[in-house]
Length: 147
Ligand SMILES: [Zn+2]
Ligand SMILES: [Zn+2]
Image 1: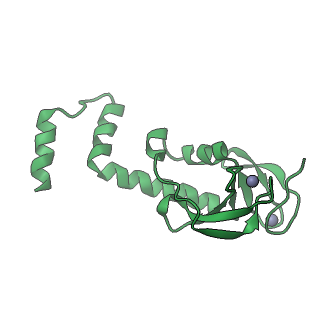
Image 2: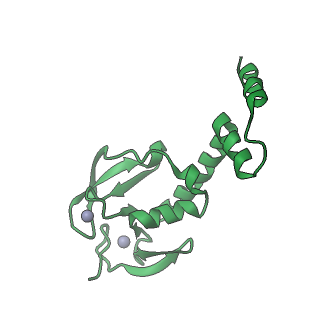
Image 3: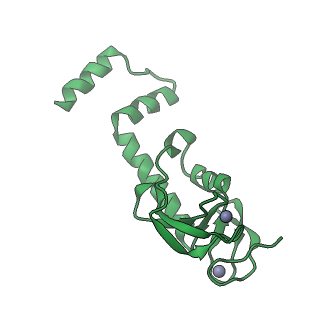
């Protein structure tokens, strides 16, 4: 069965975006991402540890309908950033307008920078590098630094 674009009803065609196979609209440049495809998109930028975060759901009803089940989709702020995506309430997937997949990647990059600045990420970073996991001395140093 062919999916149709929720914006202009054009037939979606399978294509590549950032190396991920998704259903794309040749008319408006939007794309339909299933849950694992959106995860794959994030993983082009960050590892799984950094992907954890909020998908903050369902602030308002979107004007778009899910291409799979035709339910009205929900607009939500992607991971609490100022990037509004549309998602099927039945979790069939996400609609990303043209350019929004690039913004998802930007959000992820921003997030990685933020996490690297934070204490817990520093420790995870050390662990990932196989270095000192952050012993008592480091913990004390951190405590002092925070005062
Ligand atoms: Zn379209
Ligand atoms: Zn649906």
